[in-house]
Length: 301
Image (cartoon, rainbow, N blue to C red; front, side, top):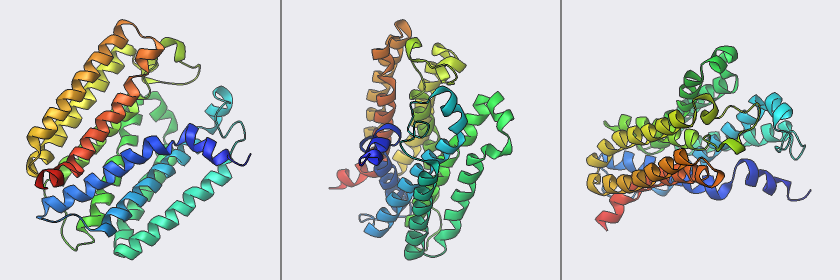
């Protein structure tokens, strides 16, 4: 099948959905870092390029790690997925993940060699996630702990992306950057929970969505709460870079859409209404990162 990798990305790692979000996240990390330590011009091309390509590779490696972790469950309950049905193999995916790691290492050594130490720290945490922290039974029995432990990779990836700017510039990590790291955690929760709330007829046997684990009402409430916490941690960053009013207004608009969509879903949990939650999660994250990463420069122009 000559186009099997195109089919794989469409099903498991859609470039046109993930690419803009990863780009926005990378630009936000580099841009906020630059602004917080007093930069007045646009970020340099090198840090932006390294941050984006490295972050993209991280997210692909996370997808590959999931393919390995879920291989038994997929074979039993989701034989239609790419790996169980033989479209691609775990060996091939592992090779691509390793190639991504070599690319990340090469970029780090090119930008500033000591950046490789932080890269290895992210790899270490990713490896622990791959092995489910050697506590598979405990994490399976405690889904909240499982969720939180796996979302912590996002602040680490964000930290690495910011370091492509401040560490490469031989500066210290700017104060206030911790708010951006916290926001990346909660933005990750928005995405993760939003994509795993389903209509009753879309639930699959053996697949633990949050609408199954917690019930639709609780899952939707947690999704809304994650958005509020993401806003609460993003707005101090926005204030520090002179974008508080604009980003608060943008968040208010998306929160209103999310509230209406969630309410309609709870009232009549059909496929069409459930299908709005995931794209709204993506919209939220895109607004957050584009606002922080591009907004300040647009206002200056």
